[in-house]
Each structure stands twice: as structure tokens, then as C-alpha cells.
Amino acid sequence: MLNVSYGSALPDEGQDSGLLGGLIFSALPPIADAPAFAHIAMARLDQDALLCESLHGNGVIRTGQLNDIHYRFNDHLLFGIVTIDETLFAGTPKQEGTPLQIATRQAYRHIFSLLHAQGFPYVLRFWNYMADINAVTDDLERYRQFNLGRQQAFAESGQAVAGNVPAACALGTASGPLTITFLAGRQPSVAIENPRQISAYDYPEQYGPRSPLFSRASVATVDQQRIFLLSGTASIVGHETRHTGDVAAQTTESLANIAAVLTEANLKTNAQCALQALDYIVYIRHAEDIAQVRQIIEQQVGPAVRAAYVQADICRADLLVEIEGSAALPAN
Image 1 (cartoon, rainbow, N blue to C red):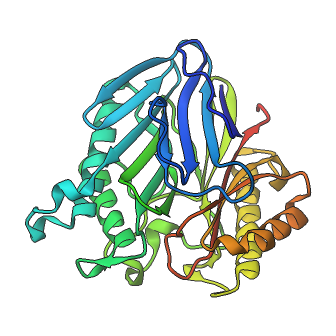
Image 2 (image 1 turned 90 degrees about the horizontal axis):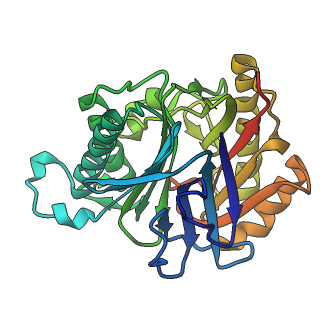
Image 3 (image 1 turned 60 degrees about the vertical axis):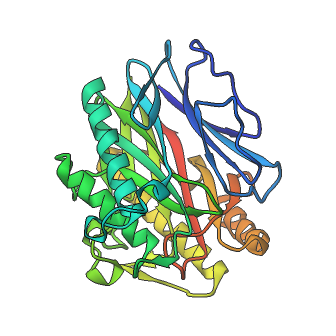
């Protein structure tokens, strides 16, 4: 099984706790004694000083480290964390790529090597975070540099670069190293696309020399339980940003995209999942927009919606909000 939970306190990290790991979103300094969690330098906007996203499974948890990766696993799932200081590559010859591109490529190559060695060949979900995601350095936006390195590593590691690819998000932090977390299993997930959107890996060249590489969602089966993992979802129709400068309209469009992804998942996998079933993390570019964004989400999903709100830069400079989530699904 896999249980994803959200709170403002850290859970027990003992081997018998079932804790695979998670992410801490906070503008406070990193917590020193929380090795199972990736620290993401994003301020929580809705209540407490930090948001803790925790992933739990069944059975005894084992731990390990390979290269830059710290990981925890049980019989069914492996969760890992990579953090790389891209400035370590600052002196690399330009023809080899930018520091962020090289760091991304190295991180992903190490991830795929680990998963092959440990027998967890199928990535269900990636979470990607980097500072200054929209900044232009070395004549290229940093998110596009990241996409170059990611696609290089996928291809060099024999991973699919289209079709059944993992769910993912990529957000900008206030500071800190390139941080990638990932969840992998022994069985492949089912990639879900959105009929309202072009698949990210098919985006035209105007979005960079290499396309983003993710599915809109994944439906995974873990120890006879199914889980829906929603990628970061924003106000994009086809391949174009909609409602530039209008955070309310972008929020509504994002929810329409999530509804379309859920419909597709229900058709493809009999997921039986609705908007109200998900737990959400909502990334908002401008902190002052939280009241408006939250009001729309509560109106359209319901007042009892389970959502946490953090401040983040979105992967396109004209996007103001992005929404991701997860849900346990009824058994087949």
C-alpha cells in the first residue's frame, strides 16, 4: 500500500514506522535531523510555518545511499532524494552544457542506475525543484536547461522519452540546490494524458531545445492497492498558456484540466476518482493571490477540499498557479 499524508509535524522515521520519506515545504532553515525528507525552500501560505508531505508504506523500511541519493524502501516501493549543488559544475566547458543541465543529467543518471541495481525499474512520480527557474543564464531559461539535462539522462539510460513516462512536477524555489525526489516501484504505472492538452513531450520547439518529459498523471498499483498521482497542472490548453495575468481564470482552467485528466483516468483504468477525492498542493506565484485561489478551489471542488498552499515560481513565467495531488483509488 501507499499512503500520502499532509501535516505540519514530522512523523516518526523509525524502521517500523512504514515511512518511505517525503518533502518539507518551508521558508525556515532546513531541519537537521530529518534525513528522510527533502527540504524545499517554499513558504507555506495558508497556516503553519511548514508543510510536511509524507509517504508511508507497509512493512519494515530499509535505508541506503548511492552517490548523491539517500533512499528508503520496502518490498514494493522505493523513495529517494537527490540534492546537487550546481555551482560544482561552474567551471565545466560550455560545450558540455550549463551547470544546471549537467547537474540534472547527473542526478537522473544516478537515479536510474540506483533503481536498476535495487530492482525498482519503474518510476511512478518525480518531484523537481530548483532556484530561479524562470531566470535566463547562459542564454537559456533555467527550466529549459533542466529539460535538456533530464531528456539527455532519460535517453542515455534507456528510458522512454514519450508514451508511458512518469508523472512529475517542476517548480522554482526561493533558494537552495537542485532537489529531485522520486517514487519507484516494481510494476509499471499507467500514464494518463489530457485530451485538452498536447502531451508535454510533444511540445513544439518554442518551449526549448528539448521538451518537458512527464505524463499528466500516473495510476499505479501497489500491493493490490491503486493510487492516482497527479502531475503539476496549470492553465495550459493545447500547448499554450491561457489567461495571462488573470490568476482567477488560471485557477479555473487548471481545475478544468484536472477534471479532464480524471475523466481520462476513469476511462483508461476505471479509476472511479473525482476532484473531491484528491489531496492537493497548490503552488502560487504571488502570495497575495492565495485568498482568490483558495476561494475558487473551495467553490469548484467543495468547502471540505483538502488543499495546502505554498509560494513557488511556476515553470513558465506567465503561469501564476499550479496544482498537483494524489488519491487512493478503489480496488479493481
